Amino acid sequence: MVSFIPVLAHSDFSFSNLPWAAVRWSDGSIHLATRIGDRVLSLKALRAAGKLASWPELDLETFNRFIDRGPEAWSAVRAELIETYREGSRWEHDSQRALCECDWQDAPAVLPVTIGDYSDFYASRQHATNVGMMFRDPENALLPNWLHLPVGYHGRSSTISVSGTDVVRPNGQRKSPNDPTPVFGPSVKMDFELEVGIILRGGPTDGSWIPVEKAEEYIFGFVLFNDWSARDLQQWEYVPLGPFLGKNFASTMSPWIVSYEALQNSRCAGEAQDSPLPLPYLRQNRGSSHWNIELEVALATPDGQETVLSRSNSSNLYWSFAQQIAHHSINGCIIRSGDLMASGTISGNEPDSLGSMLELSWNGSKPLELHDGSKRTFLEDGDAVVLRGRAQNGGRIGFGECRAALIPAKPWQK
Ligand code: MN
Image 1 (cartoon, rainbow, N blue to C red):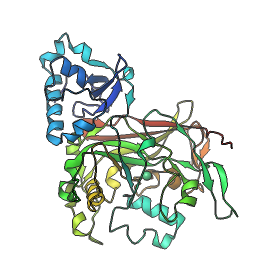
Image 2 (cartoon, protein in one colour; image 1 turned 60 degrees about the vertical axis):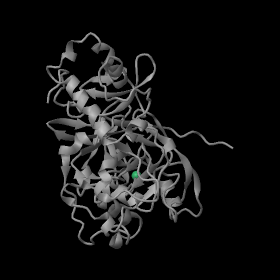
Image 3 (cartoon, rainbow, N blue to C red; image 1 turned 180 degrees about the vertical axis):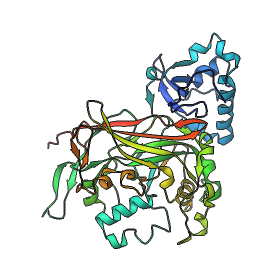
Image 4 (cartoon, rainbow, N blue to C red; image 1 turned 120 degrees about the vertical axis):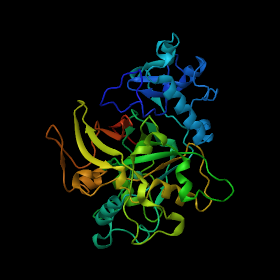
């Protein structure tokens, strides 16, 4: 399928993608939108021009209420967009078309959903193994529960921001094993986490659950997610209740939600789960339970020059997204439309496929060299972290950039 809007071969936004975003339109208001190549298309303006009858005629500024309508409604709008923008469509020469489009650089993105709740998993075996080796016991790196359930924690939705928003280095307590007492100040071990997030539709509210075999029906779409981490704060505070201030100061989300439907031809098998076999409520046909999304992390210095630090793939997850959803809801926990679940850091088996500075520099013991010859163990003020991701389906199904710069800590004073 080809659109009359030209798409360059390296564009993330082929006609097969049609992702969802919220953008600030030329009149200053927020429009929900999709994108083909470099062109952003306003769903609201298309509806006003008499196109896109399946788009709910609501003055929406977020996708939450649309997500509530479910997969058939999502699919209907996508099908109408394809019909409207395919090669040969009469819409190409319609005088109203110009009112519905703009260049992507003229439409800055805002958060596309109101995220009520955010949970973060720990679903990459290699990441969990590496962290276990560094902080606990190299002989028993995975804790006894890890192969039996997708370990996760509740995050903080209030500090999730869209790509392009600066991240302030947090202050907090840290105490290394050699310090006699804790010290306070800006974190000295600032890190990123390469993750993929899913935006969900609401689930049962009566104490029942989302079964694993139906769990994917609740996935509205996928985003790239940088779950910024202050490792020194995290290491001191996390016992026994888990991540807290070392995690909840910032997370960065890519602006374009790539739909579940667009990624249907990018499925792949996950790692075998036969030793041990998961409990029945988590058991899933592994033939196509994962996604082949190529992932990349680059560090950009203030001059704009980039060094690629890591290349990974979402197929490196052990626990699938369906298993994460099924596990999250099995106790009756209510999932609401717009909720976000993130995968946890996605690390592969190779030294250049690790999804955090913690692992790449092995907790600071192996400095990384950047393009300009400078070294990093953790992030410095002025560094920007850029996540990129793409699948292939005829054309490229990409996410655009998930980018944010780290800026200096606010000086604390009593
Ligand atoms: Mn995380």
